[in-house]
Structure formats: structure tokens, C-alpha cells
Length: 80
Figure (tube, rainbow, N blue to C red):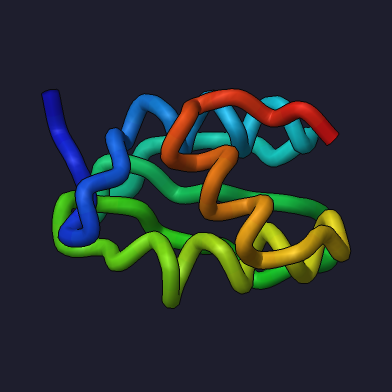
């Protein structure tokens, strides 16, 4: 079970990303690349720090509170 450097399961990040409408593809240097129309791609790997990389990316799409986004990533469920 792969996790980011701050302990978030990669599967949970993918699950939440898909729930907000992001596309997920595999990359050459990272196992996952998150994409969303009009937003720069977000690479995700075990070396990723979700709090500083994934949360701001998702905030730019959802405009939700960063704390709520991080909690959703920790739980693997998007409830907003």
C-alpha cells in the first residue's frame, strides 16, 4: 500500500481526485498525474507531500477549505 511522504494513501488521493472530476493518468516519472481542464497537472508519487502539493491544486479547482480537502484525502472520501 503506497503512501505519500505525509502518510496519505495514493489510492485515496486518486479516489478524491476522481470525485471532484479530475482525470488521472500514469506518467513517466510519477505513477499518477492528476489533470483538470485549465489547471496545470499535478504529479503524485510516494515522494509527494500532499499537504503542500495536492491540497493547493485541489483548492484551485474546488475553492474549498484546505483543511477540509486534506481531511478528505486522509479519509479517501469527498463529501462536498
